[in-house]
Image (cartoon, rainbow over the protein chains, first blue to last red):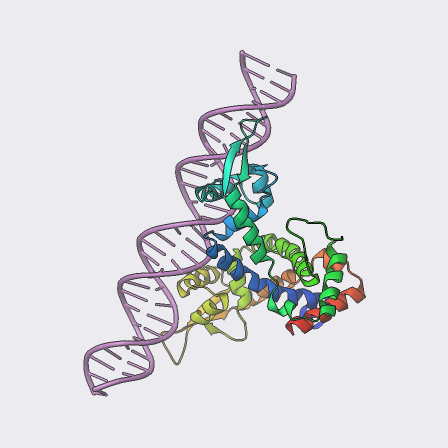
Length: 146
Length: 146
DNA sequence: CCGAAATGCTTGAGCTTGGCAACTTTCGCC
DNA sequence: GGCGAAAGTTGCCAAGCTCAAGCATTTCGG
């Protein structure tokens, strides 16, 4: 009988604690998404969809569904909403008439740019770190994810 | 000139890049919640509710609503679901008969413990960092959030 | 002390999401 | 040519979330 169950909290290593601290940042993230989406007249899923699209590279509906990890039928309504606001258009693919490409309009591109700007705003907790800490944080995360 | 203009990522400071990298970790987190909730026969909101409760400190419905940042009427259904599974019970408060306290049952406590265990699992990207990097990450985040 | 306002929770209506199944159109392959 | 597979849409259903209304209870003001 080695590890007791209570080790979950007692035996907390450095990386576990770091992950828990990140969880606090994540908690703030969701309300922010809702707020930002509202400011742009979008719902959060519509925001994610628009964010997932590349203005320079139209993709089929199914590719968008895969990117959002949801069902095809779900994307239909999502794109309906974006199209109603003139942010994207559906264009039939040349080589396969079953496929509909989701194309970001010029207006959609502008909204998307402002969106990305707001979403990449750094939470104040991180922004108030010293320059050295900020670089250290980036470097560690680069090694983890880069 | 060093930074060539890259549409979204130009002129990015260290902390902005760090924040963007964290975003990738957060992206993985949502599907994980859905999966874990499913494994425990819960829906994600029910999972958050159970996680927000303290087995040693029953709270009124309204306090739970405040913790979850949602409407009172919403937690009614949430607690209904948890109660139907025997994870919590409603108990009237002594001093005010309008108030209903949400009490975590013994079974709920067990589920909650296993839940917390799974949810605090560190993503492999972080787990594979060197011990020094893990400590550095923790220390920086402590300074930011502690 | 009594009536009115306020509080805590529940219910109902309305909207949105998200998944599954069925259907249409189109494609690829034998 | 015909048949199975794929892309997208639609319909249906479960669930979350918010607002407005309702009910029981408490608290406040005169």
